[in-house]
Length: 376
Picture 1 (cartoon, rainbow, N blue to C red):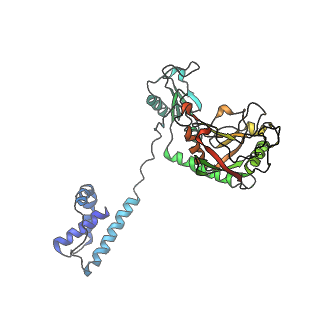
Picture 2 (picture 1 turned 120 degrees about the horizontal axis):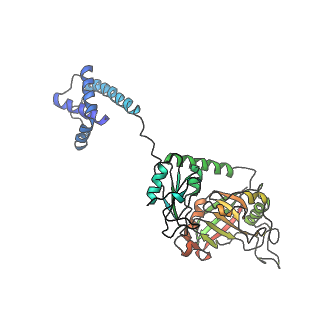
Picture 3 (picture 1 turned 45 degrees about the vertical axis):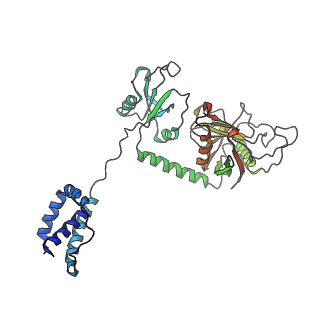
């Protein structure tokens, strides 16, 4: 609009020299310009004026009037309401995934022909923000039939944390309804939470430096939950520093250092876990018992560290970094820490499994911990 007004003034000067401005005339002209703005914008875009051959030292009054007019237009623009927020009616569809939530409409008696129709059903239900559709023509297990459409309710945080938890073996297609603003709010809240956790002076802070096929890709920083999981947290801390020396003869890993440095990620499952360990017993000698507090913690978000074991109370030096929520691990594996910085490094490791048989990769990918230690 500013450009239209400037162009009009310049054209006026060309037509009659220095125009004699008068307030009533100007206000009428301004009204006409605003009402015909769309038409004139097209015209002006084809005929750009780059200089004014009629400009002289006597045009200061014109400039004052022009600035006043531009101020009016600025005021009009400032009072224009912003566009409405984007609709929640966005499916956020993800194949081979099953988002959790409280069921508000059972799929056993609710069928839709497509996943899109299932999303539409969720959109039209006041409480629904999660939908799950059985995509497999042979059914989805446990008696669930093709085209069943389940409607659910969950928090936006839980929904976003669940994003990416997909696997070719999951026969469901699911999605959720949330706005970009809600997503940004959740992400910012999570960023602040991890920042506060990282900066908590009462909790140990350790690191893993990672190379893939000889190329350094970054550092993973981890806070340890020493209060909930004192045994597992201390075991991991000491394995990061290597302070316990060499495993004695007659013990698992004899001759190896009690140190994660040099360890390979030997079990990488796409969008599930990055698993590694020192290939030794624990720092306590042999295996150690589960921490009740850590065993009670939920595998409810990506970035958590969980002990790997062969059953109850068989923890040694092996652990996994969760790449997505994994509620089926709850009560079986001790949660003892969380990645607070560098999760993108863990994602690069995890990507090595994508497209491989069973979406699983091993030590042949040469994802190695080349150094580890304690920062606090």
